Image 1 (cartoon, rainbow, N blue to C red):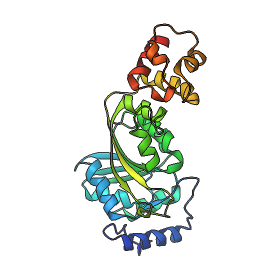
Image 2 (tube, rainbow, N blue to C red; image 1 turned 45 degrees about the horizontal axis):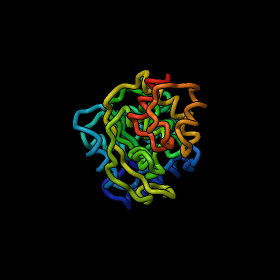
Image 3 (cartoon, rainbow, N blue to C red; image 1 turned 90 degrees about the vertical axis):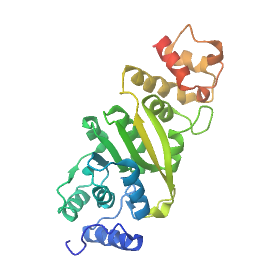
Image 4 (cartoon, rainbow, N blue to C red; image 1 turned 180 degrees about the vertical axis):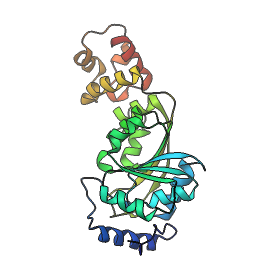
Length: 270
């Protein structure tokens, strides 16, 4: 264990080799079910630390893994609470970073843990639970989230009405956050190499998850099962009779509805 030392985050070649050795030592075969891919790109780690954190800040890291991003955050001068579902990885990261008192790692499911969080959230989000984690962040009290997600999800987060990527995740986060796609990263930034590129997305909260957000979550769940149909037809199925919605909104396709259109529907019909 001690021969591995902390993650060598200044060299991609060394970090890839270290990651392979660490996984071999632990007897861990990265799980597709858990979406386990490990950061091995020093430039990506530095970008995340620089964009997401300020010196002296306390942040919650989703999926601390083997501790590579955790170390980059520590070098930025940040105190880190890492949330890791895999107990083997959590124990390992804690031990290789144990010489720094600013790191704390707990074994937990971030989707459940986030409801207690009031600090900024950072992390490379496991692909298999990305949408669930974004909703969990939305329902938390975190003021900011700076997360690396698969590129397709990043495009969904910043999509415009009427486009193929526009949907429920866009709308709910539009209501709660200001969002920006900061930078994209190639598959080779991770080990094992995934099939898709990733992107860093910055989300700054503008309001808490309130009753209106809950109603948006519910109405879009129904409406977007028929995203290409006209609102008039789908709305009748979702809420029954509802008077007071302008004709120009009723004649739109569901995927053409903007946030203001949906807020009007929510406040009129629910």
